[in-house]
Image (cartoon, rainbow, N blue to C red; front, side):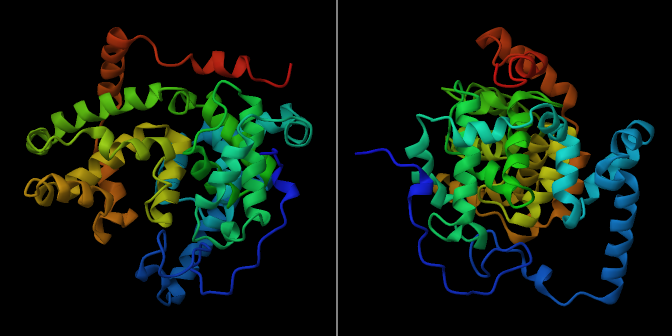
Length: 362
């Protein structure tokens, strides 16, 4: 079969109009916002939202010019505001500022265009096959070979060339797709680079390397944390032969963007980009804590179903996230990482090494 680029395919028919929620997802389908978000909001809500946006604009400055200065002066204020949720109209810009991707973009002019237009990837057919599975209920990605799917293809193809060791892995589509809903192709690409190569936090590339080595480490850490903090649930999971990989792998690979309500995923991503992967552990533990009393009564099949279909109240960020923030994991994560590395060897190179080797196409 002859290999074809996505821009050689004709776009499919434009899908018929259907009502969407405020994020662009078709109402009544997976990832739709909860009913409460679609109710008429009071004038007080909008006034409060306007005040919040004004505070954020003052904090970041024009185009983000004041951001680094503000973070240095008032880090705890920044952390508190991010945990409350970044205003949706500023989310794309703030994500780029807190991830370090804006600096990478400025340091590498023309690189993204070169990767998209002039380079070829061994993963092109795999990416074309998978893109229709990424947020299929969102209007931006619905049209076959339409603008959304082409942008997603370009970002994933460019990354698979930029980092041939990682190439392309299916879970990356949900991460790139989420970013594209808030920024341009080139901005999304450099944020993907910042995440996988570790511009600010530990590099994520081990989530997607052959054998998923970082996923294995995170599952080891999560399993120990769960058994320490929720011992009754840990015992029940052992009795029912529930392995952590059966339910938590996608949490780490897609940072909750795969099957969780979009409004919750966004709030988690706000914190994830600023504080790092520990929020994934905290949210996972908070979910299990929230549902523990029901889970310990269920047999194997029903546990698996429950872990893929959490109750609506557990999916409310204003209920779930305060519980997650109250869970302390940093010290224990370090201990468990050392324990895992003694047994299995180091999983990935350091963040500094990762970016030094990927500052551009040399």
